[in-house]
Image (tube, rainbow, N blue to C red; front, side, top):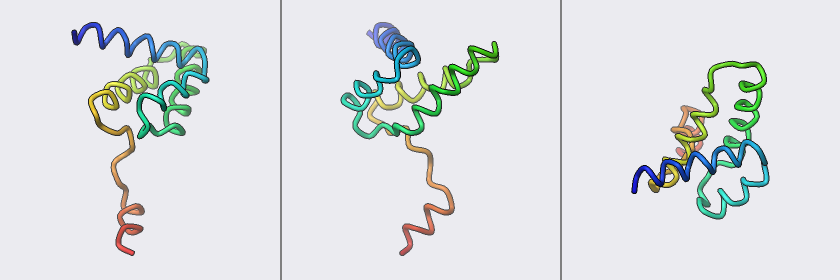
Length: 88
């Protein structure tokens, strides 16, 4: 079962990289997804492929999708600036 979910995430990632409109499907499945971060990683993944660089962003998209699927959020951990905002 886990193997099937892994392949499903891989296909979703590949479709997203091929077509940015797949972000709508991702948001429908995972409302807490950070759209801006995912789009940035998509652009980075495309650039990495073009420059034949290691697939860091490609793997990061997969990691984010796995975390979202497991009920987490792909939001970054709070920074000091965000902590200061919460103290108001």
